[in-house]
Structures are given as C-alpha cells and as structure tokens.
Amino acid sequence: MSEPLSVVLWRPNDLEAVRVAMRIPVTPASIRAIAEAMQQLERHYPDAIPAAQGHLDAIAAIDSQLAALTAVDLASPVKVSRKGAAGEPPDTAPMKKLDVIEYDTSLFLEESETEFASGAPSAASVLQQQRRSHSDAVLLVLPRLEGWIPQRGGSFSGHLCRG
Image 1 (cartoon, rainbow, N blue to C red):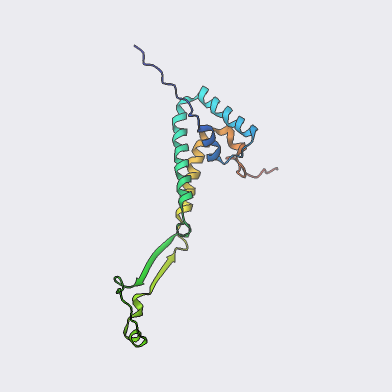
Image 2: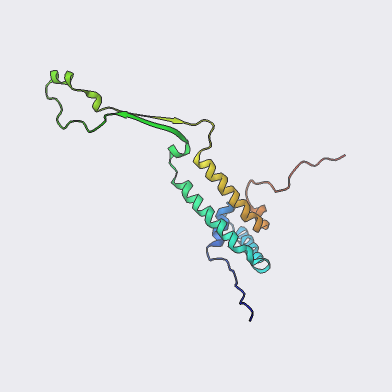
C-alpha cells in the first residue's frame, strides 16, 4: 500500500508573520506579493513550508524578547555591585539630637554601582543578529520578496566596471 501524502499548508497568520519578519510595509501590493510568493512555494516546493514556519516562529519569539528588554539590558552591564547595610536597620531611630551622633547612619545608605562593557555585544545586538539570520533564511525560501524589503540591498551587489 502506498503511504498517504501529507499536505503542508501555510497557517492563517503566516502572511502577517512573513510581513513582520521581513519588515515589509503594509500596502495592498505588498500583501498581494507575499500571498503570491507563499502560494508559489506551496505549489512548487511545499516541503520548505515547515522550515519557513519554524523561522517565522523564531523571529516572533526574538521580537518578544527584544520588546521585553530594559534600558539596562540594552547597555550590556558587566558588573553590578551594592554597598550598604548587612541587614535591616533597627526599628527605633534615636529621638534626641545627641543620640544621632552615636547612631550609625550608614545603615540607612545604600550605594549601587554598575559597570558597562564598551566592546562586548549587548543582548539586543545578539538578538538582532539572530533575527537577521532567521530573516535571511525565510528570504531564501521566499526570494521574490527581496524587492519589497525597505533599505536592503540585493544578495548580489557590486560596482559595474566598464573597460
């Protein structure tokens, strides 16, 4: 008996995921171009669809990680140190001015110091690099979309030299 062929189809939200992953602007023509590229892949090479969907899922996860980054994460801290009281300060503070001299006010102070790396890549740049590699993989599967990506040169670019 022959095995049934498994048909791999695009998911309903994959068109928008491709648009977001490639950072293609929202226009009727661009949406039509994405849909045509997806249909062409579905007709001619459906085995590539699961790989493309995996890259789209990875890009969505990276985008959510990038959105969750704080300013400290973006600056790539190397070392964070705190100086202050070893424990909780006593409940009762001195009531008379003369008692303040004997009371250790350093218990109330806390200093924090953060050092940042100058040459090390930040978490954001590492995530952007991973996103770019997944985006390039999707572009290999859907090469007709390269013209729709804003401010991105072609894969084969160079200067024309005439002799």
